[in-house]
Image (cartoon, rainbow, N blue to C red):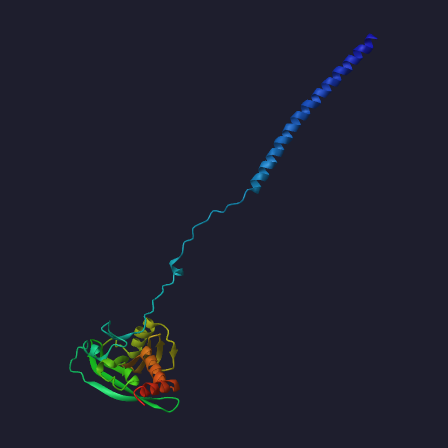
Length: 264
């Protein structure tokens, strides 16, 4: 009986030791697993973080920067020595007052325009011609004027009704020695490079147009060129005056004005 109790006690002690050892091993390995799982989670958390790429400032090379040459507007009237002396629609007396040569003669011309109905309309024009010489050029300048008001009434015939409407220049190049300037040089540097690509080139004339002006330039020969400038606004005024006075509606309106002076 005593032997049986001793054996039972030994078995019980062995079982307790085994259970205790198992619990310790579970705690040890469980901690390692939790730590490893924590490490995995941490690594996963690091992978889930957004990747931020640092911006590197770009340096623009000077080769990529295009130089833009500003294009000048075509003349809006008579320019003398780089200064606008008389804009379009300046009247004849005002322009004469700024021309250096006081001995100029004004030439008056009778022009005409024919309507679609065959009506010939008289148009009064005037012009002033003078010469200007510089170190490199000799310029023959013609300033042209138009009397738009004369279309409305023949009583509008004094000089103040004549408006600057066109300019013509013939430019001759002097002997400059070496290198000799040519008309092609002037077209290239003073027309194409300043005013840009023309609206039209008909093989002879380089033609530019703006709302208030038109500009044409051409070579006459190696040492001469011609420039023509026109006020498009004055031309539109002429067209409007002709339409106002000589269209069917204009003729009826004119008749009504005439009838007002008749008493029955």
